[in-house]
Image (cartoon, rainbow, N blue to C red; front, top):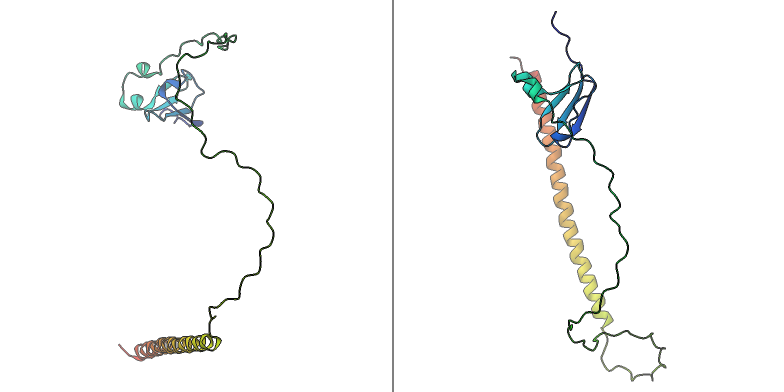
Amino acid sequence: MGAPIVRVQRIKQILTENLVPDRAPFGTVFVCRDTQQVWIAVRSEEVLNLSDVLEGKNVLASKPAKHGRDGKDGVSIKGDRGERGEASTVAGPAGRNGIDGARGAVGLQGLKGDKGDPSTVAGPDTAAVLAAARAEIATIRGEFADLKFIVNAIHEVTTQADQYIAYLKAKVANRKL
């Protein structure tokens, strides 16, 4: 039999190809999001580019780039407070009087005014309003009756269609071929 098949132990997504490590546990697969390249750790725990291996290219040259050693920890960039600067000598634009200044508190309610004169405009005639409302109700009832008639007609057509379909099915079932 041939060589054993590599069993993938874990798949890791990496943002950029330069983050692929030199060595990893056997069977670990790295997928680079930026280049869509796939890297796999072999038995020697070296990480190789899977596309290069499958194409028969020089696999030793397809190892990920070596990373440099980490730099020293940086010293805090926060320094001492500087001296106070001098006042500006550049003249700014002239100020204006405020248009919407601060408003004071709401005042107290005033005294109740004198009673006004009775109105001379006649109000609606109750008999006319009642007659208009009754006419509108009669119109709505007539429209409702028309709608009820249409709904009943649709229901009857549907019922007759169902009966006709049942009749046709029975006729086909009794027919001898």
